[in-house]
Amino acid sequence: DRRELIGHLRERGITDTVFLTGDVHMAWANDVPVRAATYPLSPSAATEFVVTSVTSGNLDDILRVAPHTVSLVAAAAVRGANRHVKWVDMDSHGYGVLDVTAGHAQMDYYVLSDRTARDATSSWARSYRTRRGTQKAERADRPVR
Image (cartoon, rainbow, N blue to C red; front, side, top):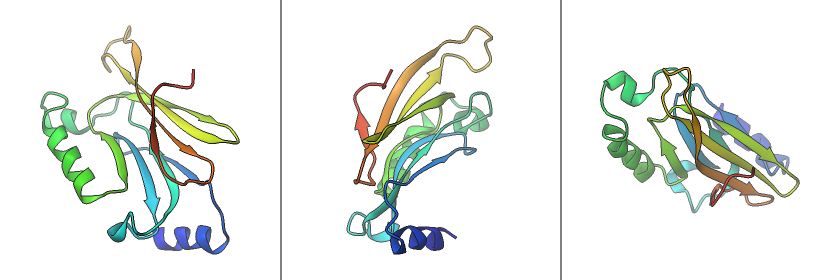
């Protein structure tokens, strides 16, 4: 399915594609390479922004370990084996705010102070964007708003 979808984009010259995904209970920012095994020699066909869960369990919750412990090793392994993955956060709970203009699409990632607290606060964690014509994710130094 992935090959077919990327082939469709490439055959028709469709650019500036951004996939918004979730339901893995982690936050990611990725390039979507034509052939992941040869990336970055293989071009990127799109960009993908994945948002985490607000309350559903994620890696640290499932393993019952402190956040940003076991996951740091796992995230490093994921990034080491997948050069198209620009960032992954396997522990935080939160949401994303996507800003789309003619020149870019930027995902601002926010995390919750405590997923179980009614008075939880949220704070900006990180931002990634893709600029028009690049099909690559790059870190942005601040949220849009």
